[in-house]
Image 1: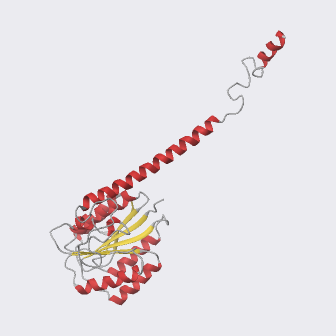
Image 2 (image 1 turned 45 degrees about the horizontal axis):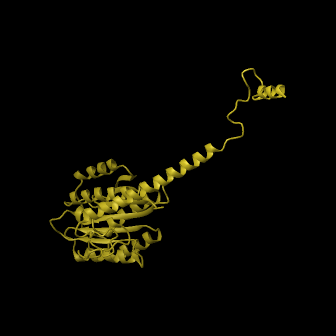
Image 3 (image 1 turned 120 degrees about the horizontal axis):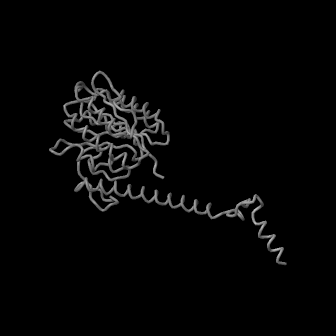
Length: 281
């Protein structure tokens, strides 16, 4: 059985707000369609401080409403460390404890925290078994990128549970470029979007036979189609098992169950026939 995930999507409000808004929508659809047991929350990290815009939900309308609230709040730098800690608390108190916790952070603003502070935070998230993905986009300077790389190295260790994707400035939409990254393709996917720096590199082991760097929309559609088909087959197998069990129970009848206990004269069923048989002897 595929375990659901609890996602907390965090982003900074800035002039690039529209870009992460589109990416958030695509990521939400990918998470929920991949597993109906998953849920997604949304929070902002800018302004005077982080703000939870939508608690964990499967309702895209609540996510869109949360995004709409930020349109008039484009200001300030990102409070990265505080935002991640608040997101971790929201995930810690999720109703479905079986969900694997993951935070996805969209970063395009200057990072005020120092590298040491972020490394300590990474250790804390690792201790709580919370994966943290970073999506860097816009004009991110080398110093900020180096800080997040240090965080990523610390939380990953020898695993591949957390990702860092750098989306260089281009004419392409952030949401389109995000499609071919491990954040969208899942754990274990080859880095097509430039994890930990730089774009490029095809997914050599992509299971659907489609290079996501060449056709990311088709790759995602195939992945979603496969997961939907798997869910459909599991549902059919479950329905067939339930039908077989029901048929088995119906076939087991007590002896004489079809005959009434009393006849129309109030005598035990079958007594008249027995008497008639005795008279003919």
